Image (cartoon, rainbow, N blue to C red; front, side, top):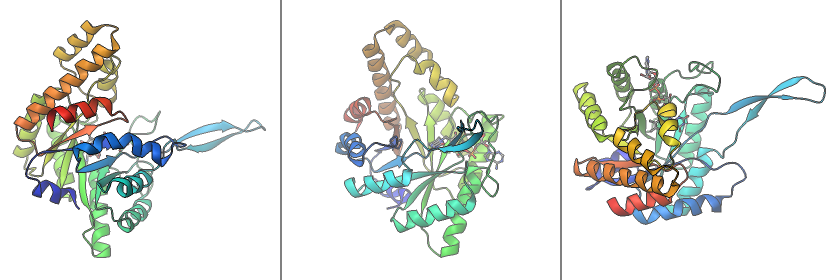
Length: 309
Ligand code: FAD
C-alpha cells in the first residue's frame, strides 16, 4: 500500500521507523530479531536507509595503489525483502542520487516494482568523505527534486503509477542552504516534482517543527510533514548530533545531561524522557504520524512507543 494512502486513510496518528541496514556478515535472522521488538506497536511502515559506496586506495605487493570499492552494509533492497516477507509490513527503501547514474536508478526502480514495493524515499545524499560539496555522478541527479522527477518519468515510461514518494525536510535548515526560506522554496520544488509527503530531519525542540510547518504552509506546501524524532542516548551526542546534522539541542536538555555527568544510565534516561515529552506534545498537536530514527537500537524506542501509542 502507498504511504500517501496510509496517511489519507489513517484515523489516528501512528508510528513509523527508520532502520540502517546491518553490516555485511550479519544474518537475516539477526536483522529480524532486531526489528521484532517494534512490531508490537504496529508501525505502518519501515524506512531503510541507503549508504553511498566509499572508495579507498590500497597498496598492492608491487607498491602501486589501486582504487577499491568499500561497501560495508547490506543493500536497502535486500533488507526490505527480508522485512517484507518476515513481518508483512510496508517498507520504504531510500534512494540516493550520490554515486549513481540515472540509468542505475532506473534499474533499481524496476527491481522495486518487481518486488511489489510501493514506496520510496528520494534523497540526494551527502558528499563523499573528503569532498567539500556534493558532486553528482556524470549522468546522475544533482538534487533530490531531479530524482523525484526521474521517478515520475519512469512511471510515465512504463505507464504505471508505481510509487508513493517521500522526501526530506529540515526544520533547522539544510546546512548548505543560505537561509530557511530558500531551503523551503527548494522543498516546494521537490513536492511540485511529485513528492507525496515530507519526513523531517530530527529535532529536539518542537517549536522549531511547528514554526517550520507554518512556513511550509505559507509557501504553498500542502502535503503531510511528518516529524522525525531520535532519542538522545549518550552524552557524546550533545556535540556529535549538531555537528553531523546541523541542528540545535535545547539548553534544558544539554543542562540536564551535563548534570548527569558520567552516569551513562541517567543520560540515557534523560534522552528517552525528553523524546517521550516531544512525542506526546506532537500527538497533542495533531501530527499525522511520528517517524523514529532507531539507529539500530530498540530499548529506548520501544519504551517511547509504549508510553505514547
Ligand atoms: P536536496 O533536497 O537535493 O537538498 C540539498 C541542498 O540543495 C539543500 O540545501 C537545498 O536547499 C538545495 N537545493 C535543493 N534543490 C535545489 C535546486 N533545485 N537548486 C538549488 N538548490 C537546491 N542520506 C543518505 O545518504 N542516506 C539516507 O538513507 C538518508 N536518509 C535520510 C532521511 C531523511 C528523512 C532525511 C531528512 C535525510 C536523510 N539523508 C540520508 C540525509 C540527506 O541525504 C542529506 O541531508 C543531504 O545532504 C540532502 O539530501 P536532500 O534529499 O534533502 O537534498
